[in-house]
Image 1 (cartoon, rainbow, N blue to C red):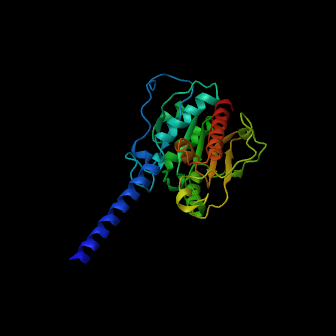
Image 2: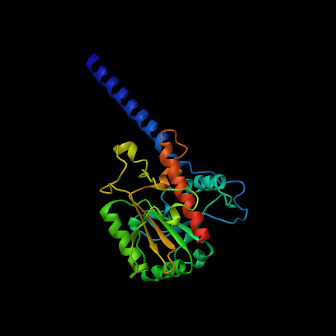
Image 3: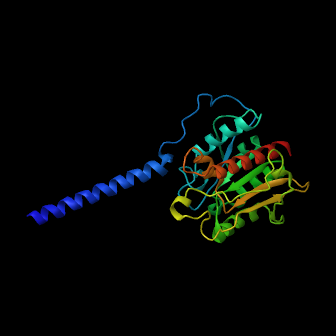
Length: 263
């Protein structure tokens, strides 16, 4: 009986330890369970609005989440607070989700698309996105990693532009110098680094800063491959997240916005 009681006690303690560990891990990483609150001035009209592109993907659904909604809405709302502090743009405090099937995108000169390594664009959607970009629009793609996700992204973007090359952006490009001089660009890691101990995901060892230009030499598509700027925005308030990576992510985003608004 004593032996059985001892075994039962050990099992109970082990179970309690697992629960405590799970709760500790959840409180550390799962802040998405309590997203950023709606700002009190969310309805105020502004000069600039953070526009997040909603597109169909192989992950989950279209309307109820999926790849397009990664880090949403906390990353968006925390990032725009930085735009407010670091620029003179009159910036809306809340994001705007823009459906790729609508003409709403033409109201926003800058859009953010995350996890495009999973998007599935129809020919009609690609044509609308091409029209938006050639009219002067700008899209920033982020948070996709490695060879497989690059190939999926490529299939989609080649529907948009069959004849325009993707090039590595050089340090001298205006997009890296419009506000901040971004000649030293680290690989901005997502919170997966706390699990993996690596700054990269899958086989995406090297951060690649790429783009697609229009006929006048303007960057239309800014491609952030093998990095996760959205995570850096979202977790910038986490003490354990490296300050230098969060700061770099904010500087890149600010440069891209000001570039899109002025070129």
